[in-house]
Length: 324
Image 1 (cartoon, rainbow, N blue to C red):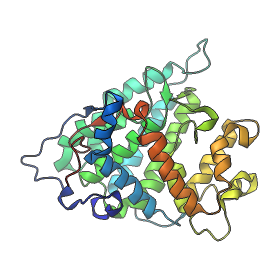
Image 2 (cartoon, rainbow, N blue to C red; image 1 turned 135 degrees about the vertical axis):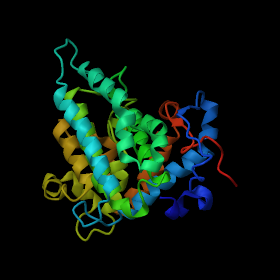
Image 3 (cartoon, rainbow, N blue to C red; image 1 turned 45 degrees about the horizontal axis):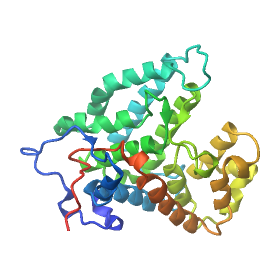
Image 4 (tube, rainbow, N blue to C red; image 1 turned 180 degrees about the horizontal axis):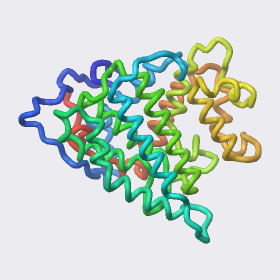
């Protein structure tokens, strides 16, 4: 990842991990406890690395279909197996009968299993000389599946999964040539598991802005999905409101897959239940949609205290300011 992060505005010549002899990983912890701390986050190495990762992936998938050819490394296969395990645990943990419709308490049983196994799962993905990074990286995996107290899920949890992938890039488990597989295989599988969690345990949207948010649960697939559609010969932003266009193309494009999921989960006029997306359909080009969504992501997710107060910082995603 580090090699192509010009877009993040920081130099990563020294981004390679120091020789292993004296490098110590840290179990990540919260550092943003008050609104004034937000400046510390925006100036941090973590912010530069995180945005660099998002933009590198955004550039990598530009104009490419989910079904195009790309290499799948051993690490990617291991990540898919790991997500497959989380998926199986959902099947083994059916929802319980309870009076309240939302927030099924069986989710807590599922989550407890992940909490117990996360480090071991992450160890299976890491190269053998990086196993000592597992406790640090596992924190982001645990943070990426929702909150077990509130039984909710939102863009902050999604950001933790992107941070998890970013950390795997930083330790060299994932490489620049894995770009397409990271988004099209790993992130896509993660989304499928999250949708299954949301449906099975009727999870609440975390910090939802109702119809004024982009989506109840996700944001990144809209960014990366709009990048896939840049310069598409026939599909324009207005077409995602048409059921036929969505049904014919959702296997190829993440953005349309998200629209399909919304259409399945929500009833009533699209303009009412997903007003922000409806507005986006009027934007003339996918590149404008993509740029607008990146700006919106920074403003609505990364610069919002209620989201970032939960973000954790360690040695790989550091709260230290970017070196000038």
